[in-house]
Length: 101
Image (cartoon, rainbow, N blue to C red; front, side, top):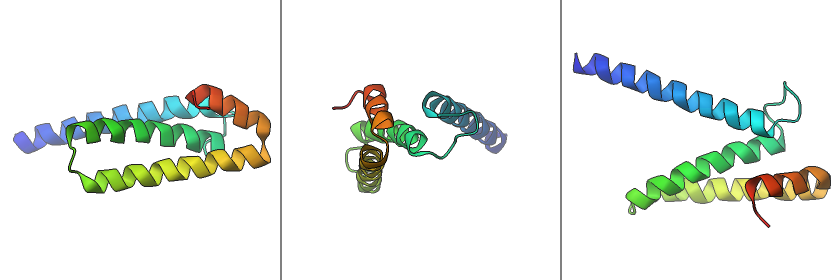
C-alpha cells in the first residue's frame, strides 16, 4: 500500500513539473511550434536555477546540486551571449523578461 501511494505521489509531481515546463515554454516561445529556441532554453534554465537555489537554501552541503546550479547558470549565460550577438531584439526582450541587466 505504501509503495502504491508513493508511486501515485510521484506521478502527480511529474505532471505538475511538466505543466510548469509547458507554461515556461509558452511564455518564451516565438511561435506555437517553438520549443527549442535560445529564448525558450533561457526560460527553462531560469526555472531550473530557481528550483536549485531553493533546494540549496535548505540543503547547504549538497555539493552535487551546487555543481548543477553553476553549470545551469553558465549554460544560461552562454545562451544570453548568443542572443546578444545574433539577435539583439530578442536579447533585449529576454533581459526584460528575466529582469536582468
